[in-house]
Image 1 (cartoon, one colour):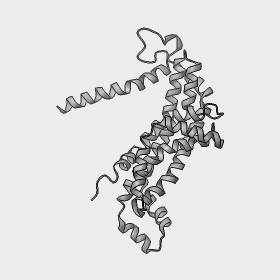
Image 2 (tube, rainbow, N blue to C red):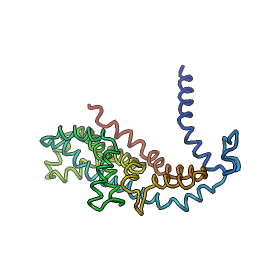
Image 3 (cartoon, rainbow, N blue to C red):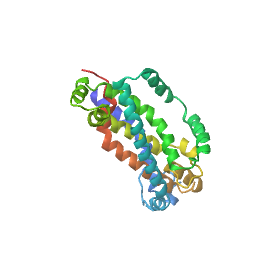
Image 4 (spheres, rainbow, N blue to C red):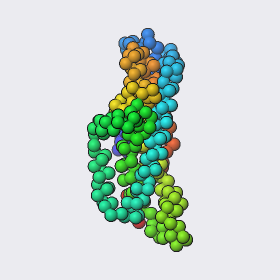
Length: 268
């Protein structure tokens, strides 16, 4: 029975990963073999032309996405970590209502938020800017980050914080020297999700940065498909390259993510 379950799991995993494999296969396929019937299941007589084309045209878009992603992570942590500490340990008046508002904020469709940001950025001059994208993407990450960090920080023993206060540490010193190091796994978790949301964002990018000089990779792929809809190897090569940073981050940070997501779920 165990072997049957394992076989079923492998089959289902293969089915789910097949689109990824096909994307990689097509990225190495020559143009003249693209419409071959039956298709090549492996990149026979493969070519790197698609990757050469992408590296010539898409690197600026990748650079912008990297800046937007890292900026979103930084802004999210700066806003979410102190807010979570306040809700978890300082318990300000109205903290329950604020937590509810943050939960509701995650349910608002992105296109509605994009329209609101468009009106605000148009009047403030932040339309078609990298800073505008960082601010917009952070609105998706901050509520999630606050909820995750609040759950974890609520589980930090009061005795640990009391010991810091006894040694003369104030609220800020306790937060920086005690709470942040202890919350490492959760901080890495919210950082990863914030980066991935910013990296894969298309709604905010297409609404708030459609005419900008510095556009993220999602718009680069969108424009590239529109301009080169017959060069499928180059299109798929773009998708493969755009997936590499996210894949590396997931592989490197997976154990921190597992610990951060489950943190606070069980108390001793």
